[in-house]
Length: 231
Image (cartoon, rainbow, N blue to C red; front, side):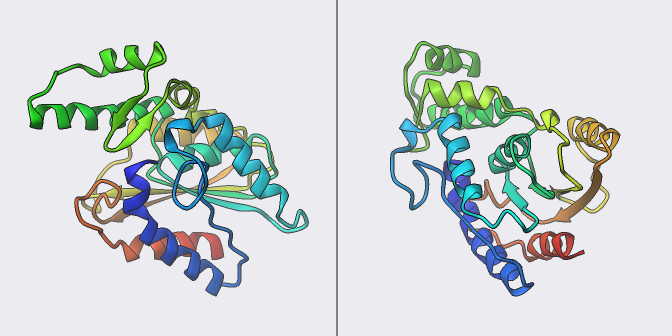
C-alpha cells in the first residue's frame, strides 16, 4: 500500500522466486494505480482493486488449489477476496486489524511531515473529515481519495468468510522471540478457528521492513512463508 509497497517489493520478488522453485505456479501483480499497472493512485478504490483480484483469479486454472499471500493492506484484500472465491489457504503478513487502522497510519505520516516542516498541525480526525468532503490529500507523495478512504474503512480482518478455506498462515513481525500476539489478532484467530479453519501463527524476528528508511531484508520471513505453503 503506497510507500509500504516500495519497501516490500524486494521481498515479494524473492518470495515469488522461492515459491516457484518449490513447484508452484505463481502470479504476482500490481493493483490499479500501483507499481507497473496503469492509472494513478489517486484514482484507486477498493472496488477497483477487488475487480483486479477477480480478473486475475479468473485467469487461473480452476482445477488447482488457490493459495493467496498478502502483505499488510494486501492481507486485508486477500481476506476480502476469500469471501468471493474458492481459496484453499491465506498467508497474511503483518495484517492490519482493519482498513481503518491502515488508513490512520497513512494519515499519521502526513501529520509527522507537518511537524517536521512546521506547517499546519491537524489531527487524524480532521484529515479524515477533509477526505470525507471529497478532498484528495497528498500523503508521502500519494494522492489519497475519498473513495479509497471509504473502501479501506469497510475492510476488517475479522470479517473473514470461512468458505472453502482450509488454513490461514499468519506471519507476525516481532522485535524479539517472546513478543506477544496483538489482542485484535488473537480475537480474529479465535473466530477463524471456530469456523473450522486451521490457523498457524509464526512470529518472525526482523525489522519492520515496510516502514524502515532503508530497504530491510527479512530472509526468515520468506523461509517461513514458503515453509507454510509447502507443508
